Length: 135
Image 1 (cartoon, rainbow, N blue to C red):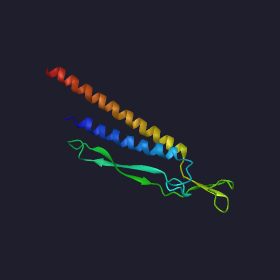
Image 2: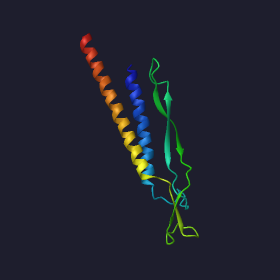
Image 3: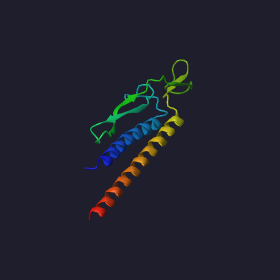
Image 4: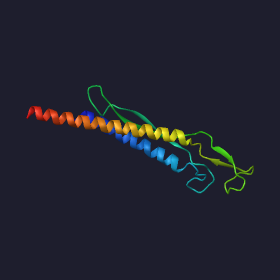
C-alpha cells in the first residue's frame, strides 16, 4: 500500500543484519578457538547488500542482504609463548578484526537505520496530511 514504507522497512532489516555481524565481530575479537574447541581464530563476518526490485514500485527498489561473507584475511599473530593456543614458535593467532573499522561500520549502520526511521516518519505524516485533506 505504501511503497516508501516497504522500502524503508527493507533497509531497516538489512541494517539490523549488518549490525548483528558487527556485534559478532566485536564480541569475538579475542576468540582463538573455533566452535569445536580447536585452536583456530574466529573469522570476521561482513554483510553484502543488493537491490530488491520486489520491494517498491515505479522504478524504486528496496534493499536486501544477498549474503553474509566470511573474511579470509590471515589472522593477526601475537607473540605470547605462555598462551595455551600458542604455536611452537610462541605465536597466538587472533582474528583479523580492526576495532576502529568495526566501530565506524557500526556508526554508519546506525545512521542509516536512523535515516530510514526518519523517512518512515515523514511518509506516515504525509499520509496523515493527505487523509486530512481528503476528509
